[in-house]
Amino acid sequence: MSGQKVLIVDDDYDTRTVVKTILVGSGYEVEEADSGQAALDALENFDPELIVLDVMMPGMSGYDVVVHLKQKPETQNIPIIMLTAKSEPEDLITGYKDYAVDYYIPKPFTTRQLLSGIELIIGPEDGTESDGSPEQ
Image 1 (cartoon, one colour):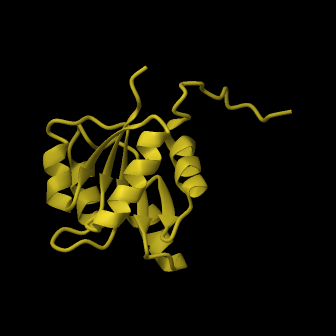
Image 2: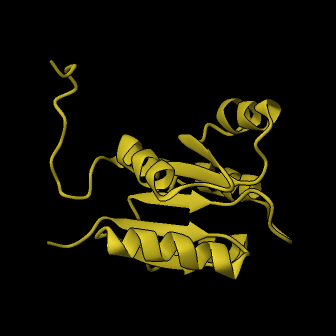
Image 3: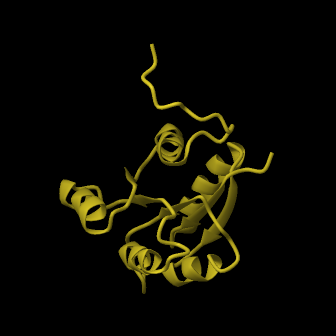
């Protein structure tokens, strides 16, 4: 089975490596980008089900990337999880309200937080889909 595709965008090499290790170990197909522009370039050849995006990056911020993605029909519906050290309540409101991101995970994060957030947004990697009804 082919893994669900995730694009990781973070200027910090260590963060990208940790996230990639977790996701590849969980069956996801992963591409990395070390800047906002590199992320936009990567999307020309990679069609992810999800983007995990840092906010604070030199040059083009994560929010700038979101604006670019939302302007293009081919990328406007890709779910976005912000993975960032900006974790004040105002930061979350900005991400959700002003940029319509799908989920917000503050750094530092745990493996469970990351995988749970991804499953919440795009479903489990094993392909089983919830029917949406509450569990008994």
